[in-house]
Amino acid sequence: MADKYKQKKIEYIFMAVVFLGYLAFNGILLLGHEQWRDEANVWLMARELSPLSLFGEIKYQGHPCLWYLLMMPFAKAGLPFETISFVSYTIMALTAGLFLWKAPFYGPIKAAVLFSPVFTYYYAVVARNYCLIALLLMLLAVYYPKRNEKSFLFGLLLGLLVQSDVIALMTAGAISIIWSGENLWQSLKRRSAVPFINSLKGIWLPLCSLVLLIMQFYHVSDSPVFQVNSFGKRELLRETRNYSFQILERLSGWEESFCLLFFFLFLLLTLFVSLKLRNIQAVAVMAAAYLFQAFFSAMVYQLHIWHFLSLCFVFIWMLWTMYGQCAEKRVEDKGIRAALAGLQMLLLVLSASMFLRWNAENETSSLDNALHGMYSDGAGTAGYIRENISSEELIVSVNVPRASTVLAYLPEYEFYFAGNGQKESYANWSEEQNLEIGFDELLLWVKTNFPEKREFFILDSSDSCLTDKENRLEECEVLYRTLQETARGEEYTVYHVEIER
Image (tube, rainbow, N blue to C red; front, side):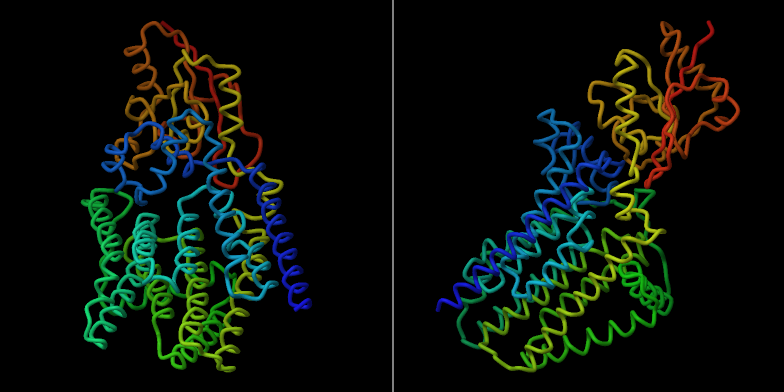
């Protein structure tokens, strides 16, 4: 008894040290992080739109409403833009705590996964909606054994998962279908409607959430960003297969032969466990989520590392659920335990490979850049403008998405987009925000619309809407210029332009 108590105490101390180390490490990365345009766009929309008007803009952004609604109280309260990163940091701290103390995995493996890019930096520091997927999947794993006892809560978590991101739709849908299916089977088996009716207390929530998602993305084809590609059956299968390998290659840095080996071992172990348990539910969810991302990349929009990382959390959910199924059936089979340990080792190998790739020179969001580089110069540029240019002055931007990063730090300022002459805010990815203009046309617009102005300022960046900026901006006075390359291509120059009357 004393030995067990001592062992539990050592485990608790180990977990506490790992957790505090995780908080400290990501805290250091957070303090050095410069927010960029994808974070800024969410913040500006949350600050300027009402919940109702938000739903009219969602389809052009590619993400459902949950993250925006979560940001609204903070943005509308006038808190600084940097708050968005502290929200994601807090969410991932909760996620890490659940994983560390609740997941039935080996302690050293949990620690290694925690300090890999699965939990560190990408979701904890760079504030994107994907951190919600991580938290919700961990909660779904925690409550999986009690899914029928707490059906409303389980259903609520699934409904929220639907609204976390489009890429989570297949995961949430697969879990929902399997959950309702197993209860329907139990009802038929027992000749009692009670199990199925009990699941309906929760299953209506993800169904309603799906309807809300469809409403948000109705007529999404109007967006120039999200267009459905057309493939023949064979071509579609080939593209999906190629993206299936690309996902793992992008996460791990492995070549195709290593990916094949990983897939083989994964399938071997998961099928062995599933056949022994006579339950393929968990691996079916994993397969559906993975293939959905490959299919989505081929058909609609090429996904990236932030999307792919969510599959690691589906992997964790799957493995955690398999342990739960063993407990439900009181299975003590040594073969199953060995296979589950093997899957933990695969998770460890994947996490270690991701950590090594994170340190690669060609990785944009590398650990070295996070510690010593610059992600964006939006904060530095905004600081210069606040200190040296009055909010009464006319500031004209040449690229809405890139200028939005600067604008998010300056709630008291107004920017105008040169391409269409409109007040700038968040990027809506419309053709209006892709219009071009010549320098002389811009001068005429300023003279016509602001006859009292004798000067104005241009916030220049890459992908400028000015068609002749190379020649004409050289004539203008440079007030500020980013002196180093940034990870996200957000280098800025502030020009002072005098108007001749």
